[in-house]
Length: 217
Image 1: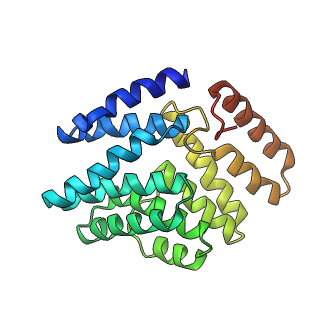
Image 2: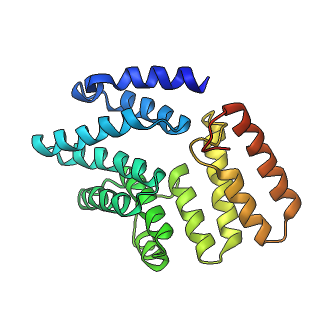
């Protein structure tokens, strides 16, 4: 259940043992649970501390990783200026050190924040100038949002559906993380495909009801 998953994820992040021990992957898993259940208090505390710890310790790539996660948290909470600032800091590091696979994450939140702020051309330029592969569900979702903002609805629908295939193949079948079905439905509606749009959004609503999280509903 969402309640039990939240309890376990909170316990996993308690006292920052995971990040102190550099068990970043485990901390990210717990954070992902809290994102999907929309209970972000422990995640905020953990990654704020992570940003400060890596800054004090002088770990450039560690700072970029922590700033990327904090950008994601800010983006989900609608704190777009903060999301853009953290994502840009992380993206600068990833670009300078040519860490293209990691850059997919910072780009996802930077492009997403720019689009939400109405900076559509800046988001497009950022993505066009990048050499990072667009083969990450989060980045596909952000590019889909960019394509919608540009009026390129067929390409947007392709991105959202590709995002859904990536998530489904990994076993993620609820909309608490990325609502790709309703995003795709909005694009398909603009392409005069109302039946397919309705099918997708009905599926997502049923999944959201099973999850029982207000944000997803």
